[in-house]
Every structure is written in structure tokens, then in C-alpha cells.
Image (cartoon, rainbow, N blue to C red; front, side):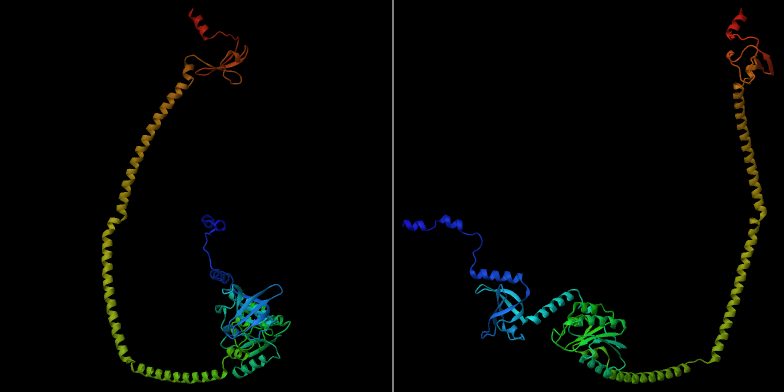
Length: 470
């Protein structure tokens, strides 16, 4: 019992080690891991070597994809592997497209494959898909930017190989359908090294020729043979072309980047030739049908005009009746004019009589009397204003005269005083400015006395008054 109690954990230790997070089962853990992996990885492309390839009775394919450092399990179900155009074997280099997942039963990380092809062509296909997604994202495949082809083209520039079957096919179709079309061949390589550069140069030369439409074409071939038409530079040049471009590269199952970016994509060169031109025979038949229809319309219209003309002639009035009506209308107008003139004359005579009656009231005599009365009134006002001004000026003159008399030295001189001036005509107001023997002038009230100073004394007016008093 003692040993048993020593190895059994107590309740406290069990509580301490119990986690707070939920406890997962293995299946729940694998399920959550699968969901997380699938949410993180979208569609992927993987290249590598096939190994451990197995094909059970169900038709599904199970294999590993490996390189020198790692490997991954893969599964491709029968609804997908039926479209694979190759026989997969161990050691084969392949390119796969699929989604990453996890097989919950064993917890195996795996790729669910939906596309497989040999690695060489697969790399081209991968590059094709990447460029396709890029240009589609930029709107180069947008149907809204594609232009319609001219209904009746006069000139077409064809960019293709001069020795290819595509040129012979389109020329045969045009000769049969629309021989009036002017065709200009712009030769260019359509596969191999240098083909891309020649196609770009050919497109630029074709634009300089000012055709109504440009055809870019070649016959069928493998993805590698058609690769020049999957060039990004060529795609952008086609998209930037000011002239509508038709692309017909390969057979109906082939699709290139130039097909997607061109204004019109044709499945074959012959189909392109038919899309670009109307059927001459159909045009002739349509023209003949229009001619017959137009002839019938013209005949019917002429018949209608004859009927209209005949009815109009029948509705024409008798000229004699028109003249009689016009003569009567002239007489009526003449009578109305006479009455109107008489009424106008009476109105003018009455207006003249009224003016004659008003003439004495507005004549020059009445105005002259009014102006003379106003003149007399203004003369009276002027005299009153002059008298008031003279009285005011006389009173002001008296005030100024009294002020001047108060300030004048003449009253002082009349009381026996004199103004002394020296030889320089300066007023002598102090003995300090003169000396004995100096000539001075004494200005009195009635004249000037010329004198000479005998002596100078500082005895003032007050001293003299006192002496006189004594």
C-alpha cells in the first residue's frame, strides 16, 4: 500500500498539470492542420522527378515528386488524370499544378494534382500562364479596348512566312471571296531564333504602309514552335497598334498571347481571311436584290407623284375667280384706307385747334412778363444785399479807424512830443544811441525839424518835471 501511494499522483499535482486549452484528438489535430495548410496555399506549380508511381484499380494516381534534397507525396484523381496527354513513369521530369493539402488518415503532407505535363513543355506552359495573368491584369485582353474590323477593307498587310501554307490559304480565300482587296506581304520568320525580332519589325513596317487591317498568322505547331507569338514585347506592340490587328496562329485548339491581345482572334488562317472580308458573291446578290427593290420603290414613287400631280391639277382654282376676289379685296382695302385717312385728318385738326388755344398761354409775351417780374425781384434783392454789405463794411471801417487812431503816434505828437531819428533814419529812443554834435531829425505833428545835439544829459522826464515845479 505504501509503494502504491508513492507512485500515484495526488489531486493537487493532477490539477497543476491540466492544460487550460482544449485537448485535441489526433483526427481533430490533423483536420485543423489540413484546413490551415489549404487556407495558406492556393494553386501552385511544382516541377520535379516522378518516383513510386502507383495506379490502383480505382484509377487514381499516387506518386512522389522529388528533387535532390526533398520529396513530397502527390495524388491525382481519376477525373483529372484522364486529361493528361502523357504516360507517367518513374524518373520522368514533370510539371504539376495543384493545391497543397494533408491526408488526415495518416497525417501525410501531400499535393492534390489537377494538371501534369512533361517538364520541358511545362515550363513554357507555366511562363505562358504567368504572362497571360500579367497582361490580363493590365487590361490588355479587355474586350472593351478591342476595335471592330472595317466592313469593306481596301488594303490588308499580312505578316507571315512567304513560304508558309498560311499565306496560300488566306490568298486563296480572298481570291474567291473578295478579289478587290489589295494584299501587301510583310515577310517574317514565324518560329525559331530571331522570329520575335522579325515579327516586331514586320508589325512596325505594316503600320507604316497604312493598311485598313493587319493579319498576323502562321500554321499550326507545338507550343515551342508557336512560342514567338507568346512574346510579351509582341503582345504589347499588337495592343499599341493604331490599326486593327487580326491574329490567326496555329490550329483551332492553339491559343497564343497574340491571339488574346489582338482585336480579333481567328481559329485558323482561312477563318481569319473570311472574317476580314465580306463574301463578294453575297455582295453581288445583295446588290442585285437592292437594285430590284430600288427599282420597284422608284416606280411606285413615280406613280405616286403622278397621282399627286393629277389631284393637284384638279384642285387648281379658276384664274378669273381669283382675279375677281382680288379686285373685290382691293376695293375693300381702298375704302378702309379712305375712312382711315378721314379719321386721321379729323384727329389732326382737333389736335391743331387745341394747340392754337394753348398758344397764348405759352407765347413769348407771357414768358417775357414773368421774366421781367423775376428780374425786378432779383434787382430788389441785389440792392438790399448791397446796402447790407455796405453798412457792414462801413461799421467795420469805423472800428478799424478807431483802432488805427488809438495806435497812431499823431495824437501823441499833437501834445508836444516828437519822434527823433538819426542820420540812418533809426528811431532814437535812448541817449545811448546819440552823442554831442550829431545831427538828428525831430518829427513833429506838422513837419520835421533838423537839429544838432549840443550836449547829452542823463536827466530824465521826471527830473525835468520836478525842476519845472520848483
